[in-house]
Length: 236
Image 1 (cartoon, rainbow, N blue to C red):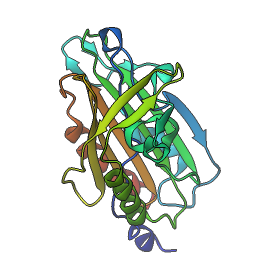
Image 2 (image 1 turned 30 degrees about the vertical axis):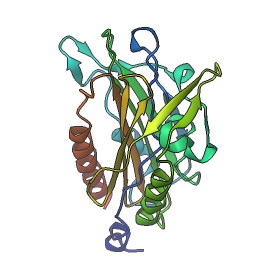
Image 3 (image 1 turned 135 degrees about the vertical axis):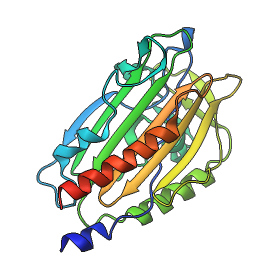
């Protein structure tokens, strides 16, 4: 397939499993996603290679919400939501397990970061590459439909079995390549904002969590789209 045809596969985004960060003491726990995953397949058959996936993650300690306290990589696996009721909403309210990602990826990387402030700020990410025939628009379409069907309180729990209620919010307007929404813990200030990007043979999810929605997810989305575009051109 010519490179031009491959790039024509670029379209809609797919919003990944909604991350929910659980604010335990000092708001130090998350609610979704696996902290560090380095699952790579063989040679890529798409515009982006599996070896480039790590370039679609925010470098550790590269951003700060509070001066002098940058977000740094942390293993938050034990604090993530591991299940939900109804089960089909797991990917909408939780980052763990990458429930919204197709399992035929050729490469995948994830990273979770947080700062050391009392009202903690968290950044949860995962990116994956797929074969050249990946239908980004169709994938995003399916994700949006799932988010829309989960517009009700969802029970979610972590490895400790502690149950919490998560309230997913409707999709918000975004570019055709991005699906965005948010979740909130019932009775808590803790909010997670989700952005799922699907372009060419790439799916990239960004989740920001805090008690004051002070992590600028829109800036991260803009930067991620630009980076994907750069990598697509570099492999052309």
